[in-house]
Image (cartoon, rainbow, N blue to C red; front, side):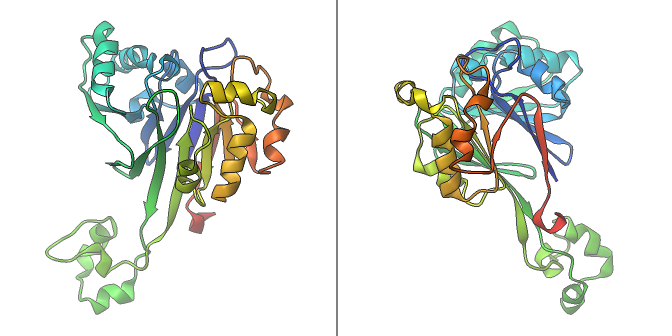
Length: 298
């Protein structure tokens, strides 16, 4: 099962009652963080998750509200005794950005590695299979499609038919290859996994609906209410209705709206603009958390 949380749901600047937009994913005890604005380390802890479990940080782009929290987060990790390396990924320029931001955190007790991601680049981080895709913002900005695969069930009859010794069954079920015996020799058909798509700081663009097709969850910015659609266009952002239309096109199961404008202190006043188009739209809030199970476990 995958735990998904939005420790922060705000855009532009942090507020007293709203942290900056970020997303935390946890599967099998491993954490993945998308974006790291000012104060993200506090937001993650308030949401009930551990900084020490994070192995990968994905940055969508390099506006301050999405990356300026890195020094504080890294220092917090170091102060908590982290020694394992950390990977930070993002668009071209991520190497320079991380280097610049860590000037004030020069003696970390762990290694920070960086990796540039471009449109449709894939990244495997253990169980997390990630695809970056470019969205439409005022600077190069990436969305992220996250999938967790689900292997087939153990098939005893198939294993015996293929002459696989019983002593290998357990390891083969875990994906290992032993003495010429491969997992497909003991497993049935691959089952449907878990699928979450994240897109923020963008105008509506078809690629979001394409990547989120039949997803369990689409996390998408809903920065403005419909009355500010002109402002959304000027700043290369979306309204809640824009996000709802993408979710409807994608036929995903649920939409979480996030990255609210500071000028929208109470998103509930316009959430119906989204639910009228896509009834499964949810007005997210700091700390919202959901556990997504594999379809055959629901």
